Length: 285
Image (cartoon, rainbow, N blue to C red; front, side, top):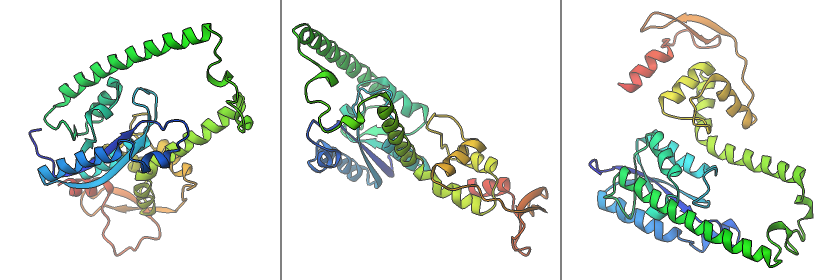
C-alpha cells in the first residue's frame, strides 16, 4: 500500500463449526482465530497503526448469499473513522470474487494482514483462483455423494436419526418461521451501528429525509446495498421498537444562509438556528 494506515479495523472469518461444536466453542478453541489475530497485531505494529475494532464471524467462505453482519459492522466502523479494513489472512477472504468485489464497490480501503504488499487487483486474482479450487472440490464431493446414493446410502435429512429430538423443526412452516427469526436477528446486528446516530438526530428534530441524507453522506448503505431514504430510516427504527416521535415544529430563519428551516417548537428561542446543510458544510470543512 502507498499510504500507510494509521487506524485499522480487523475482520476475522472462521469456518462454520464441525458437528458437535457450537459457535462459542469454535471461537474459544481458536479455530484459526488466534493465528489471524497475530497476523493483524504484527501488521499494526509494523505500521504503528491503532487497532480500533475486531469483528470475528463464522461463515462458510463459498457462501455467496450469506449475510455477514460482522463484516457490515466492520465496514461501517472503518468508514466512520476513515480506517483501513484488515482481513486476518488472505485465504480467509472467501473462495469467490463476490466477497472481494463487494468490498471494492463499497469503496473501503482494505488489505490482508499476511499479504500487505498485495494490491486489490492481486487480491481479486487470488480470489478467482480460490473460487476455481472450491468448484473443483464441490464437483468431487457431488460425484462421491452420487455414488453413495446409488449404493443405497441415505443422505441429508433422510438419514436415520437426523431429526431425533428436533421434530418440532421439521416441515416447511417451521423452517420458514425459524429462518425469519434468524434473519431479523442478523439485520438488527447489522443496523445496531447506525441506530445511535438516527436516535440522536431524531431527538434534535431532524427530519427523516435529512437523516437519510446524512447517512448517505457518511457512506452508509442499507443491507440491500442501496442509499438510505426516509422510509428505510423509519424501518430501522421500527426494527428496534422505536416508533417515530411526533413533535410540533415551527419555521425559523437559519442564521447563516437565512433560509427557512423547521425546528422543534420547544427549542430555546435564544439559541442560534443553523440548518442541517450549513451544519454539514461546517463539519466537512
